[in-house]
Length: 332
Image (tube, rainbow, N blue to C red):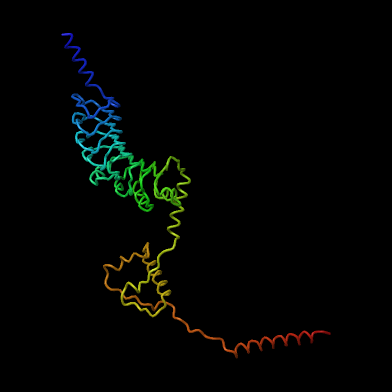
């Protein structure tokens, strides 16, 4: 009886285990955990694991640490619906995939992947779309990534570490950062864009709430100043000129090109087009024939005649003579 009681106590104690520490055990595969329904955190880092398996019984798992192993594919995670944090750095993963079933993943760490063919880390669009509402922290550093536009749907992202990749397109990076409305911390150092002129100002201007960039804090005053400065550049910068006569048929073209462009700019400004290249107002409408009658007519240039100038000179000389005679007559 006493042995049965001790066995029951041991089983109950095992059922209450919430953290399993299996790191640095030279494991080549994930062991089966018979009663793992209460396990919330599983440490399996620094082993020789090659495959993600035997995770079916861990339905309550919230944190999984599998970094620094030999895993080459993300799989067998459909039962980990409560998982919040997933650490897979320093493995051999080529494609970010297989986590569409996880409903509330908040942190994903896949940095420093050592793929056999030295290829960059790729992203499955289905996986990215499944993380749009929940993912807050993403670490993809040291993965030879050339663009961030695939991550634009992650609208709730707050922390991104994309340092030491191959990002070389500043416009692409700024457009992506602009979609992350809640971004607080970003690391983009070690990329080609970090060496470009005004790199820091460009990123700050496109990130609404960024507080830290490359481990350097950003004050509220400097962020507001940079954003307003960039907005002022867009408002006051040079705008492309356009001639409506070249686009809309039927308009007269006998006026000089500069005059036609000036009139076109004023017409477009009146209909409140934000950009001079936006001609959508003419797409669905019937052919419009604008007249140029409201423009001021060109006056012929009149050359000053020689007689008029001579008369002007004689008149002035006459006035001088009269003034001299009056002065002489006034002297006693």
